[in-house]
Amino acid sequence: MAGTTPPQHDGAQPSPGATPPRRDGTLPLAGITVVSIEQAVAAPFATRQLADLGARVIKVERPGGGDFARRYDTTVHGESSYFVWLNRSKESVTLDLKTGAGRAVLDELLADADVFVQNLAPGAAERMGLGPAALAGRFPSLVPCTVSGYGTSGPWADRKAYDLLVQCQTGLVSLTGSAAQAARVGVSIADIAAGMYAYSGILTALFTRAVHGTVHPVEVSLFEALAEWMSQPAHYTAHSGAQPPRAGTQHATIAPYGTYTAADGTEVLISVQNEREWASLCRDFLGAPGLTGDPRFATGSARVRHRRELNALIAERFAASDGDAAMKLLDSIGIANAPVNDVAQFLDHPVLAGRDRWRPVGIPGGHTVSALLPPADLAGFVPRMDAVPALGEHTDAVLAALGYDSAAVDALRAGGVV
Image (cartoon, rainbow, N blue to C red; front, top):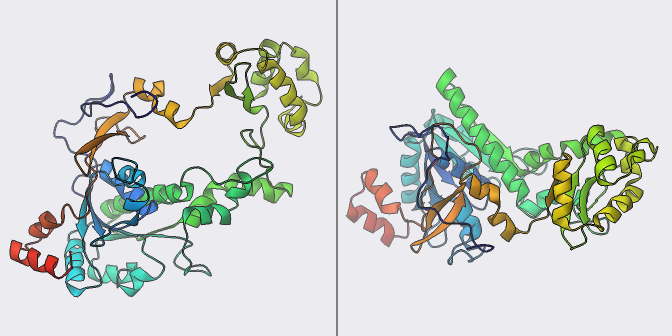
């Protein structure tokens, strides 16, 4: 429904002209088993991407509550928007790992697994005998991946870290917002960064195991993942003596690059990346070709220094035209531009519809929601987009596959183990 939910689709078909899917239906990571003791965002994002590529992901959750991200909100037919995003195509198994029986089941799962992912509290994995060194002795072919806040060594190894804390610690918050007020980034960017590096690290470790026969543990911290993404402002600050200023929707180090308000109230972002584009903007949009010779605006650095005067000229031009007319003219002269969408407008974006990026995904309770295909298209493969599991939905089936009969499963359940 326009403006509220993404469009619904009946099946996972490739876009027109795409390479047909493999006839045997296998995905690149088919045959890989991942066991994950995960919660929140970072580790689940890594394992969901492995599941997208065909890995079997067994998500171990606490009986009775499970991953606490299940309760972040209830907006998606009673389910958490975070959990729905991060946990499709996984199997949920409940285990009380504080019990001997629960640990025995976990060990059986790890014995058949290729990858173990955990983002337990600082030091918890080592105390439970689930650190990389302990696992290497018992499961030598298992690739362990640790997702931590600030690393498993160093002066902050024992500190908990959540996304906004890390945004603050890396200085990101000091760069985000208006000149008057700092702001958090509107998505869980530290978690997402860590999840992406965990995902790529796991793929690298699996490749190394397959090609060289060696197993290398993977460790990613939220802090160091986001620190990498802060490298450009870090270089700028280290070599200029001052950090880039907070500039709202303007770019801190490029001008003109930001939003301007058209006569009808439309917010339009423009981006000028080089001198050719600057000359075109002056000549064909501003109607002032002489500005290219104005020393205030003759170079990119000069335009940044004189941003206020430059913005005044561009704002005056936008105020004389409605948004659509301004954007059509900018398109015709090769200046990148776009309206500032809200989330509802993003859901209806013509690129997502035109490239057939939405797919149906089941969630607990029998509902179906639309989810985006993974952004990396692999020719010949259709990514897996299976249902989001209910808490403990696959416990009985997984235990049965390990050899537990119904009486044994009932006993585990009666004892609170599952």
